[in-house]
Image 1 (cartoon, rainbow, N blue to C red):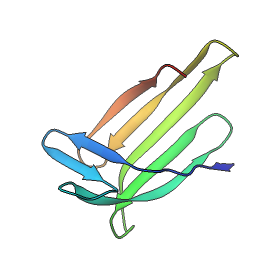
Image 2: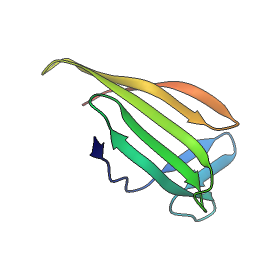
Image 3: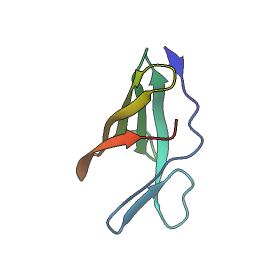
Length: 88
């Protein structure tokens, strides 16, 4: 397992915003972030770290020059999305 150092998390859904940097957004914290073989998991918590407010799970597949990453992103209580990552 590799621990991942997350610098900043910012999210926007409709008129709602969340950020680890505060400002006018709802403050959130950095939860666990780690990679086990291919998947990467990153959680965002409320500002007291009492509850998870968002979850990102990304899977890496491919060979040297043909790599693809995709997974799911969920804002708890709001919505979930399928995600893809390009330009690796």
